[in-house]
Structure formats: structure tokens, C-alpha cells
Image 1: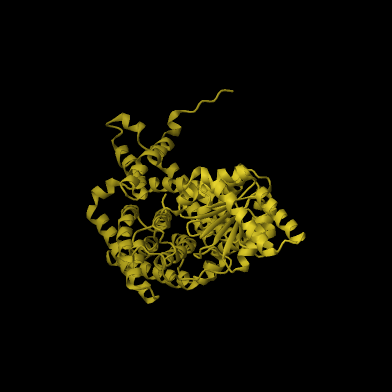
Image 2: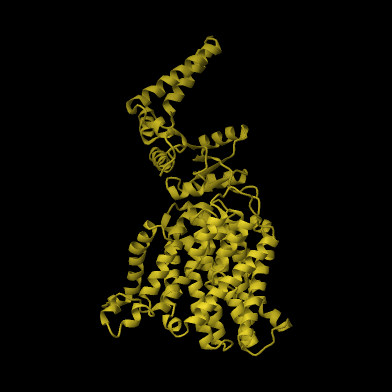
Length: 592
């Protein structure tokens, strides 16, 4: 059987990859947010940009996006993966500590913004039901745009960053009730509370309970089983299954896929596989989010903007003004300082991705007429495109320091912001190192690739994570950028050298103490930038010498002094060929 695929079937994907590989790096070089790069590419290459000229200039069909609907469907997974990663960075305990801001500030923002926007709609002649749908849609902000901006500027752990996240989280929780209410409105039902309306929310509640129950029962055993196979491909497949599977279960229950992925992330945040899952999923999240932003750009109907410029621009400006003012006031009421409240208001002032879902449902149910819906969609898109600029102003107002009072304290057991010594390898040597650090009350955490050792460490109450520490991304997740020291105790010579080399590339000022098999490997570790390398053969010889000297009657003091002297001679001998290599590199200022 013969099969042949037309090159046109892959054209849109090739255009997206070209955008990711060419346009976005240029935007980064110009210090412009990559989000704007993807959005601009979507506008330019979409059916309302250059695509509108395909009939007059046929060759433009080869360089414009032909199936924006299919790209939008795939791009929605970007939001799903983003919410999963956000869940991984939290935990149920941290979410409990943030409940006042999630269900207080978040609920206030959605309710007040929705009512004010709906009131404005009624004032401009919209029917009450249509105004309510528009108010609900435009009250929501963009998690997909705002959270990457906060992460890029390391503001997600600031008080403003956590306030913004709390509001965004409540907005994601509110999507399902809004859609259910819209379906009732479309059917001609009343909006008031009734047994029928309450029953409509039952599948969503059951879906959340099923997700939590299945997650607690199955996630850790499944990942443990996959980790024991020691296959990166199988682990990646398991991670993708968790994200997409949780999203589909959530969608079947009438919730958003993003909310299901967020719950799965919360459940995995409490496990030892958290950081390895983050490193595995990150590339998929980045690509799919880029695809989402491109799809948002393609939805900007420039013909509507050309036909009704005053209406579209007026709605976009009014939306930013109303939401900014409401968030500013609510944030001040909930205790945020003026600058932090202003930063939060600017970040949340734009429209969000769920506006497209809600307005599409409202137009399909004839709650909102087509012309009004299209105007609101274009206005929401323009306001989303303004978010990076608004965020830049907000970051200037809020300042770039993250070492400030946060909304919720770090719960016990989390990595948090506390600098910890990182111990790579948790076998017999690593366990003893951890015990000695604990005796001196020095915070530490361990990384290990053997699931059995990770499980044993977790049972003992230690902070230990499963993962490959030779990958810089994993070391970052474990807090290497704040760690006072790194101790590498693995019994694999190649593995030790890979970790030392990766860590030294990341931080020139880091103290690195590494286990070596013999003097020759110790020399290689010094060459790679280890501060100190401890050869097993040398240490065993010195300990044997100490034992025999003491047993035959040599006083303990002179024995210990001679052992220390001989150890220093070994270090100098090993360090001499590269002169000031290891320690001088360690003393340089931090750099990348």
C-alpha cells in the first residue's frame, strides 16, 4: 500500500517552527517579550493578515497559516501544560495557606469586574443576558500570558506575583460554573439558584473528587514503576499521560482541561518525582504555549477592527481601565502595598484566553449576537497583546526584588527559598553526609536516580528527589542557584564528572566537593572545577595508617596531625598541574 502526504499538510507546523526558531530569538536579542513575537507572527501570518491577500497574491498561500482552527485546538494544550507546571510548583498545603487570596481576592475580582463590565454593557444597549455573558468573559485574565512573564522576571514568589496567581487560579476555577450558567441561559432558563442549576454542577464536583482520589492512589506507584525501568522515553510518556489524561477526565466532568492538569500537578508536587517531571514537561509546555500565542494572533480579525475601530479600541481601553481599577482597589483592601497593588492591577488588566471559549459558547447559544461577540473577541485579543507592555510598567513600579514578604509561608518539607546544601547521590556515602549536615543543623536536600533509595529516604522523612542531576535544568529546580555548596557522592565516575562540570558552568562561585575513585579521577575533577575532590583509595589508605599507628602505641595527637599533613600534600600534588585552576575558578564572581 502506498501512502503520500501532501507538503501542505505540514505547512502550518513548519511556519510555527520557523517562528519559534527565527523570530522569537530575534525578539529575545532585542529584549522584547517572546510572547509578543508569537502574537505578532500569528497576526502577520494569519487569515486576517497576509492571508487576506492570498487571492490577489497566490504565492502568499505558501507562507501563511491555512488552518487556524486546527492550530488553535492544538495550542489549547499550551494552557493545559502551563497549569500543570503551576500545580507542580505548589502543593495542597501551600494552596490552603493561600485560600484567603484565592477565594477572597480572586472571587472579589471576578465578581466586581463582571458586574461592572455587564453594567457598562447594559448602559450601551446590550440585553441583560448578553451583558452578563460579556462581563463574565472579559472579567477573566490571561494565565498563559501573565505567568510566563512573572516567571521570566522571577516575580512569581513576590507578594504581587502570588496575589496575581491567586486571582488567576480562581478565574480558572470559575470557568466551569460560567459555562454551565451560559448553557442554562441559552436554554431559556432562569439564572437564579435552583435544584436544576445546582445539579448541573454535580458532574464537575464529582470529576474533581475522582481526579484527586485516583491521583493519590495511582500517580506515585505509576511513576515509581516507570522510574525503575530507567528509561527516559518511558518516563516522558508517563508524564504526558498524566497531563493529558487528567485534562481529559476533567473535560468529561464538564471542567476545563487546564483545571484537571492543575490538580494533577498539585498531587505530583508532594512526591519525590516533582523536579524530574518538571524538567521533562518544560520543553512541551514552551512549544505548546508558543503555538497558543500564535493561534491567538491568528484570531485577530483586522477587518472588524477596520470596520468598527472606535468600538473595538474603546472596548479594549475600557476593559483595561475597568479591570485595572477594580484589581487595584481589591488588592489594597486585601493588604497589598500601593506599588504591589499597582503591579498586580497592570498584570491582570488585559483579557484572557477563556474569553474566547465563553464568548464562542455564548454566540453558539445565541445569548450574544455575532457582531457584538466578534467586537468583544477582537478587543480581548488587543488587550492581551498589551499585557507585556503593561507588565513592563508594573515591574518597574513593583521593583525587581523578590526577597519580600510573601502571601503564604513555605510549608514544611518544601524546597522553598531557604538555601540548602545539595547532596547528589543518596547511597551509603550520601546518607552519611546528610546525617552530618543535619547534626550541624545545616539545611540540605538530596537528588538520586535510584528509585529504591529515593523511596527509603522519603520514608525516613528526608527531602530527597528523583532525577538526573547532570542536567542543568534539574539542578536549577533543586535550588542550585541559592545553594551554599554541592556535594557529589555518586559511585559512577562518569556521573560525578558530568554533575561537577554542569554545576561549575552554572555557578563559578559554588563550593563543590566531589567523591573520586582514585587520584587520577580526582585530578580530572579538579580540572572540571571541583573545589575539593576526595579519592576513595587515598582516604582508605590514610584511615588504615591512622588505625595501625594508634594500635601500636603512637600517641593520637601526632597521628592525627601527620594524617592531616599527608592529606594536604595529596591535595597540593593533585592541584599543582592546573595551578590555580580549580580554586581560582571557584573564586571568580558568579557568571553564566
